[in-house]
Amino acid sequence: MDERPPRWHVSGLNICDPNDHIGKKSDYITRLHEKALRRYLPTGTGTGTAVDLGCGYGRLTPVLSESGWRTVGIDPLENLVQYARLHYAGPNYLVGGLPALPLEDGSVNLLLIQNLLRPLLQLGQLHLIRGIGRILAPGGYVVVVDNLRIGHPAYISESQFAALFAEESCRLERRVAIRAARWWMIYAIRYGLVPTRYFDRIADWELDRMSERKGSPRFQYYNVLFLFKKKDDASG
Ligand SMILES: C[S@@+](CC[C@H](N)C(=O)[O-])C[C@H]1O[C@@H](n2cnc3c(N)ncnc32)[C@H](O)[C@@H]1O
Image (cartoon, rainbow, N blue to C red; front, side, top):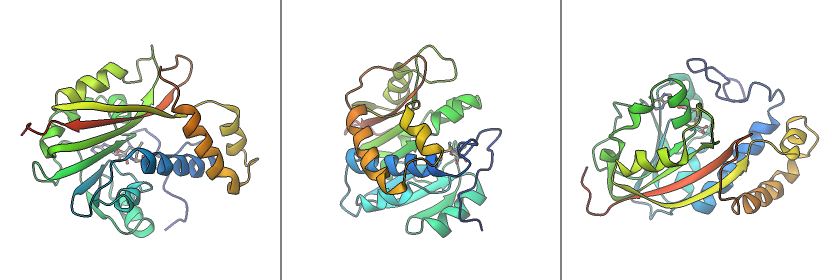
């Protein structure tokens, strides 16, 4: 199997940026995403279960294990799951997807939904997320990482994110921007002009800078992390 992660299209959607020919942009963004999850993810005690739903090729799934959760990665595409098992070993990876997840009701303490909802919107399948609250234990967390851009029909609005999870008895606890789609540094990274050894420092700096941005832009998108918590007394 290739060293580089799969770029296969999922019903017309890319797994990686097709213009990122040398893979540096994907490497940088994954570094930043790992750091964002380490900063903002609730930590586990080793006994609770975390699920990376739509885990793709598994690039972020082991961060959940590192944060103290027994971790399961789930994706409908078998080739991606195979790649994850080989290259991101540790978590338990399962083939599956919405709406029929291979999980018991009330069994999940932390659910990561990273870059899944907008692809579902684009596929006309956003409704599949309805009822996801059932798999969460009372007091369980949902971490959604997705793109926000105002006034554009291909993006889910901030209020829609809140409404989707309010329907699942989940309350918004935190909202923090982590990345901007367009700034000169990301182009320099994509063209290989920035040595990899600087990626850590740039990602830390970008996370600090973005954490101060409260709104959503109109002419680009921000990648934003939402932390929701299911009510302690909610059973379904
Ligand atoms: C843009 S990729 C994001 C992958 C991963 N979360 C990441 O950030 O690298 C979206 C993923 O959602 C998966 N997916 C598509 N439909 C799904 C469904 N109905 N249930 C769960 N996952 C799905 C795709 O196979 C794909 O791996």
